[in-house]
Length: 389
Image (tube, rainbow, N blue to C red; front, side):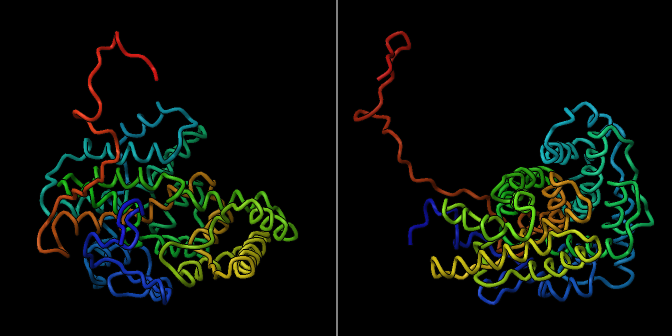
């Protein structure tokens, strides 16, 4: 098998106990628990504890963990002041990456121990929502809303974003979104985090690298592109002609297909139902348009190419976030709000060899295909004698 130039697809580079995808059966497992079971019975805070500690918390552990998260939500005033110096049109992901990295300067406690890493994990999970909401309000010339200690992780973010406490149904929908995105094995951003962690860099350096990877349109930006597509389509009646034109131009339909799942992505099942609920609640057309995009794309793929294709997590999450009133360019930062839990768990697992015999520095090999710098190749020429070929 050729292992070069394939994006490491199907190449196992590490053992993990954190999450597992069964692409054939359409299952996603967090620490042994089916994602559908967790979205039905758990919440984001409990899921964070599970990802970090390999087990569901007791009642006392859960209470203490929630208290730690709530206490860590506030970001330093100096950080808020620094945000005010950024261009107001700066990409929210650039802001987030910079300030996650800056945590290393604000919180300079011992980083090398496992206990310290768990403390930094809580800090990361708790503060990422505050950074995202603070930046959104600053760029719009609005007053920053400080965290509310009486609200859940999901409700508190929506409150800080909009200065309005969400109703219980919207809170629960967003909470489930966070659970669904909390981890997904060795995706690009998680691999970036683990690679940096393998150097024994601290939590914030590794997490900052993960944010950078997530900012790319091939990873975290897909649901933004899905919503742009839905807005371009406008009505359910336009779906078929729009998709057919995309097929004619051999262009990708965003939100359809996945590199790992060969059947339905279980996360898309949950999001599809939530999109339907929100459309019924708000009277907006996005569920009907999205479901027709799914159906028409699947039919054309089967007819034209003999291939079955299924929706991925991005197809329905786009309309869910849009109907929750979340600005489109915050879709990827919200992905980070959720995935911070998974990143933290993977960083700790990598750094302290929780699933391997010992910690190892990643050092892959590249196959050099450039010029040979020797007698048969390039020879240094003084600058005054150089000419273009």
